Image (tube, rainbow, N blue to C red):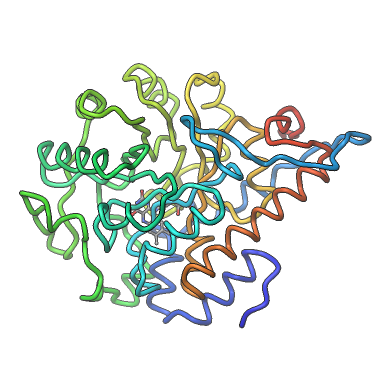
Length: 349
Ligand SMILES: Cc1cc2nc3c(=O)[nH]c(=O)nc-3n(C[C@H](O)[C@H](O)[C@H](O)COP(=O)(O)O)c2cc1C
């Protein structure tokens, strides 16, 4: 058994358990890993001015997003392939999220099919879409997602091109044969493979987003927006939510950090649609910082993969509980009794 008091310790335990090659695949970032480092460091530069003599005997961490309730303002990020760290792949992500009252965003590159994963819990689930092949292929997936009962679609737009992840280049990492693309089997068209073995992406543009919006009744969010001009376009195209993200530092080296972009983007969006932020979240205080700066919620990426690698469903539950308990205790220390009260306490340098 492992004893851990926080996600950083859980990470050390996961590192000891996984092979160096798999560890480097999960942990690594693009090129010099400057973005990866910036994501984590940006949180350490933010601080709060707490309130006192407030009644914090009970604290409510709950929020609602598109009508669904979450126990804390946290969702489990789409990560693939989870089969690399656990035979059960995405199943523990889905089951643990339901058990702890939060929402999993299932990766479009999942090992198991989206229909199979939809049946693994009665809880609310969101689906993350990667565009492959052509628009017919994309619209077929959108229809399957809605039919399977997912409550939102998150379209990832920052990973069209293959990134140079040097840790994986050095270790000669190749995808093991037991990792599958579970959603491809039922598709009419099978996307073409690139020379490196990955699949050819379809380069979406804003008009394709408009078409997807037209064809579905569930909220459509865009993941990977960082630039204010793209935020304005997202609003013009009627996108239902934005995930401010640099893909956990895995795509563009020297990309700025999502938490640094949040105040600028929050001002533009002016609470018209939910803003979700990710990248480097490891502490309850990181969640509080994001909410204070205008986010509705955050995504936890690697933080739950560590738990998954160590102990399947129980491990993911452990990851969520560690950060949830920190968040709840942190609100009390700040002198606020609910997530909504968090604004106006943060100090911006
Ligand atoms: C190993 C790994 C695989 C990922 N796979 C996906 C994916 O399939 N789809 C996606 O939209 N984002 C993917 N991401 C990005 C995450 O959704 C998220 O943006 C990022 O992990 C957040 O940063 P954090 O790991 O510091 O929490 C992946 C990230 C990692 C670390």
